[in-house]
Length: 266
Image (cartoon, rainbow, N blue to C red; front, side, top):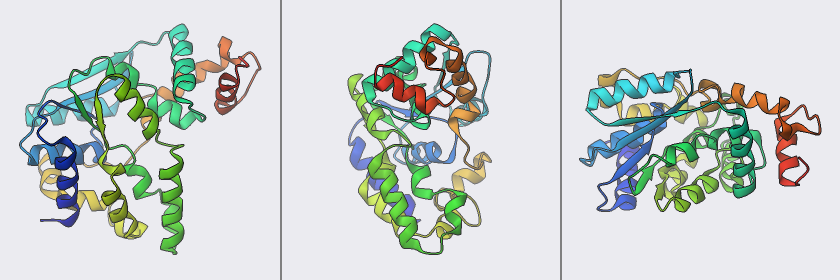
């Protein structure tokens, strides 16, 4: 069997132990699919959770529904209502409670409090941080693997992009356990032993695609990575913050408003 597939199986199996009540934060993208495929390999039928903003069905939801139907899995779709007053409250709570200091992290984490309200399972799997380990097209220009590794290590350690530490705290506050295999040191070390090209050619995230080729071939759902905040229109929805009472200082960048919240200047 494929080395990465075996490693992911071992990591997730060791994390979940004998737990049968499992949820997956699901987008239908490559990373959450690897979590699902691993569960299926272990004979588990997790509950899938995804979301969409009111009046907009994202591609993630459509793909998630197709996958759930194929495997006869329960998919719970959480609809986030677009109420501006509630948005202000949500943003302030996220920034203050989890010390979020940038818009990328804020927009990635924004839907999770809503999703967590609906999760009944005691353990939640997520593919979070895989994007960091795979790198972006920008990193494809790096011929020095050590430089690529240094960037990935710094991003994992600083946790300023994907918000893993904040999400873990959020899940813990809901009396549940978060399992993020792409934050496991064995997985991190495995990725750091590969260059960008080894990970992403001929396909983006080729390592995962080849590891679970039999699943991807049956489903025909492989797609390149895309931004959750953009695809879900969270980025667009958050633009309304600029015309809200959070922006009393007439900021032009969301990161500045976030700093105002942190410094109690709104």
